[in-house]
Each structure stands twice: as C-alpha cells, then as structure tokens.
Length: 64
Image (cartoon, rainbow, N blue to C red; front, side):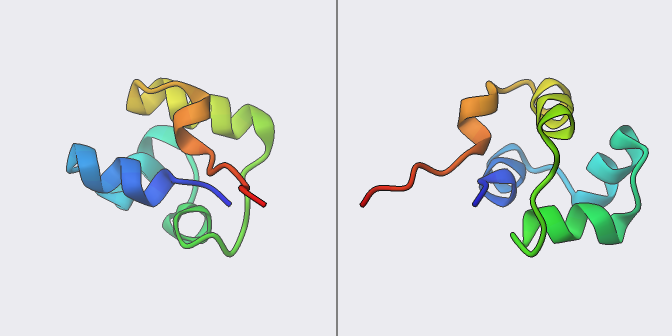
C-alpha cells in the first residue's frame, strides 16, 4: 500500500500533473493513487523526487 494519494492531496497536486511529470498515462498514475497497482521501486523514487518528499513518506507501514 502507498500514500501517494494523501501526499498529492496535502500538496494540492493533481494526478494529471504527476502523470505528465512521470511521463506515464493518467490511468497508470490513477492505479497507483487508488492502490490498485503498486509502482516499481524506481518509479516510487521518481515520484518522491517530483513531489519533494522522502520515499518513506509514500509508503504505509504495515502494523500487525
């Protein structure tokens, strides 16, 4: 699970903008945001760089 949606909302950034910066389709980014699909590690690092956050800020901890 990721926190991309929460970070986008906190920063007031739209998925379409992130998709454009990543060079990915809106549908691909929407899959990441809705947690239907998880980005590859290198994409996660790229998202973190674009959003100016740490990679750990994009990942939900699994607290069992």
